[in-house]
Image (cartoon, rainbow, N blue to C red; front, top):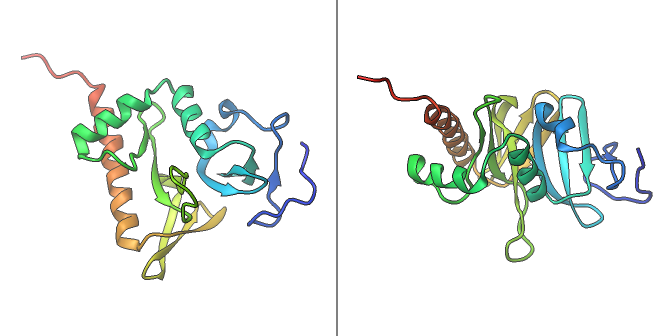
Amino acid sequence: MMVVDGTVHPIAGADVFVREDAPGIAQLADDLLAFIPVYCNGNNTLVVTSRGLFYLPWRSQWVKRSMLQHFSISQRDLRRACEEDLHVSLYVPLAIPSADVVYAPLKVREPISRNDGAHGYFRMDAIVAADVVSPAATRLMIADVATIDVLMPRPKVLSRLREARASLILQGARSVPYPSV
C-alpha cells in the first residue's frame, strides 16, 4: 500500500490509497459499512469497513456505481422502483436484496458546486446509534468502528433510514413471484 505523503485528511490515522494500490469493489463489497465523499487531494471517498477506515482515490459516485455493477443491479431500475414504490426520486437508497443490505443516503457536507456529491451512503444494519448533535446535525455510530456527523436533523435521518428499510423490503418482494390461483 502506498500512502500519499503530506495528505491532510479529516480522520487521523486513516490510510490513503493511490489508484495502483486501492482495493477493488469485489474485495470491499461484503464488508462495506459506509462510503462518504470527501475532499482529500481532490474528490475521494472515505470508506468504513469493519476493519477500519481508509480513503479511496475515486469519487463516491464511482463506488456506488461499482457496487451496483458488482451485484448486477441497474441504477436506473433501482431509481424507477423507488419512484413507484416509495414515491422517492431523489436520494434513492442503495438496496441490494441478494446480499440483504441497504445503504441510506445522508448529507455529510455542504456542496461546493452544482452536482457536487454531498451525500454519503450508510449501511443501515451497521448504524448502532443516531444522536442529536445540534438541531441540524446528527452523530452516527457505525458498528463501533467510526463516529460520523451528518448534516441532517435526527428526524430526517430516521426518515431516510425508514425509506431505506422499506426499499430493501419492496425490492426483495419484487423478485418473489405472485402465487398462482
